Length: 133
Image (cartoon, rainbow, N blue to C red; front, top):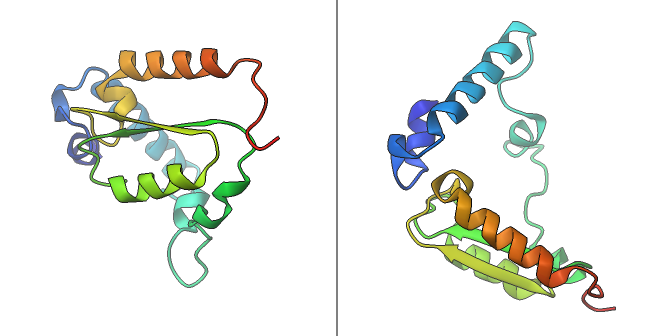
């Protein structure tokens, strides 16, 4: 579990807060095991195999009725830039921010920057009409 966190954070094990995140994830896994629950959450377990849930919502994004903020770490190995570009292009009122020196969990890699972006986005859109309306 620790390796997974470290592999997806730009600064690996040196990321502030990573110890707490790993601790909470391990505690959750232990509790699930103790209560005989699956290790993966339903959405994770149902994302694979012959009965996989639908995970490609790109064709539906044009129907978004609210502005959206998409944040990606420049070093994210899981969500690639072309995928995010397509989503942002499809969603009305979408804004994308790419954080340099951040990995998949940008909220741990750059918590202050992510919080500032969210505050700025919410302030910008407070009381504005929904896109397309």
